[in-house]
Image (cartoon, rainbow, N blue to C red):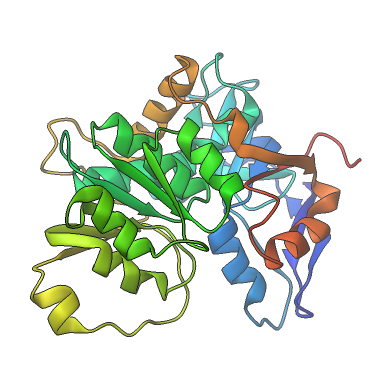
Amino acid sequence: MQNAPRVVLTPTGKAAIGSIQVANPAPGEILVRIRKTQVSAGSERNAYEMSRSRDASVGYTAVGVIEEVGSSVNDYEPGERVLIISPHQGADLVNVGTDASWRGYAGRIPDGVTDAQATFGVLGDVALHGVRRAKPYLGESVAVFAQGLVGQLTTYFAARAGAYPVIAIDLLDERLEHSRRMGATHTINASREDVVQAVHDLTGGGARVVFMVARNPAVFVDCLKAAAHGATVCLSGSPPGTVEIALQPEVLRHELDILGNYSLDYPPEPYHRFQWTRPANRAYVFDLIARGELNVDHLVTHDVPYSRAPEIYEMIACGPEGWLGVLFDWTSQT
């Protein structure tokens, strides 16, 4: 049993540094000493703003080194670097023996991928799965609403799939600059332009595939209006709340296909010959980074000691300006 620091969300609506007791690994388990965790800003801001009666953990993406393995574990060894699903904390146990769900995932990280880069495996998988589901074809127009990390990665995979034009949409020029580096052929600043009209002008009648990656549910209405007749609209973000849409003019008469992208444990997809499970998607993201084809370094704006988590969440709660990718470093406190 050992004590590890962790980030908690408190009943007072703040983030704080707490601690957690991590047991020695049982049979089938590995103990991972965590080095980096990545903030999934949309999901974690939702959690930050929720009311609660007790301290709660937050986060789900972690990179670390295996420190100890339990009996009956034959596929992993101490010293290996892995990406795991874990809250923001200094150490965690993963059941790689009998837990076949997302909790039992431990993906090995290639030597050519840094700890910081490896944290993009999970959100990279989210974006990649959304693009696989929406299936933009070569030369089809794509519009990506919002350019947080999932939006940036969605832009990249849509461009890589051969879509054109690939239109990135956001309220901030600073994020749109990153979008161009990720493959966007056109950008629209929604604070200055009529987004729906701009998308129609660029595409000659609406985008064939539209990705909603915004946190604000109201953006979904513009996503529907920006879509071409018979287009696909894929909801890849994590918007809280509800939104009212006009079913007849915006969905029915435009014959839109609306997709959700969320599944925690999706089966192999029947429309692909290869079994693109979550672990396979994450391995592909690692491979792209290792080969230098996916550059995520410029997306990291904050890589800070975990002790600064309270101020970081305050920053995120104030809005999207001035930051994009946020990592917590667990190798030191200051």
